[in-house]
Length: 185
Image (cartoon, rainbow, N blue to C red; front, side, top):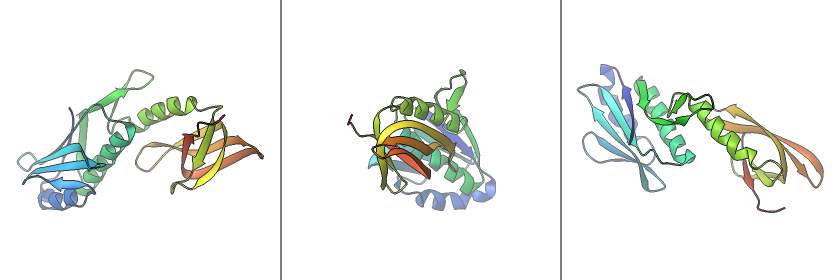
């Protein structure tokens, strides 16, 4: 199990319960225990220690990127709301190309960019569908190139891409673009 600790100032004790209950898909298990769900399955456990003024978030080390992204976002949200300090030294997710460890918060954007670069590299020259944030299809064609940017939650996202379509080369730009293979040739 991986663990991240958020230490918070003394004056935030009463505020924490409200913060945790306002997180979507969070269930209160006991006085100091919460369960974070993802698609109705346990994603993480959140425990409070008012004695040490710490919030412990424990989760599996074998999730997919979407699940880790949810945990990452929850950690950032809680930390911001309680004015906390994050220690993710026990939440190593993997390593960057240069051998540096990447964690659920520290080096997050570099790690997601590494994973996404590998993912989309395999789609170059393949037929893909490009969609916007609301899953509206923008176009279909052969993927030529793409550009990553870092989103507000420090996740690497595609903001530009170029496809070769039946009508020629098309360039798409958006805050977040989704690219998925069509399975067609």
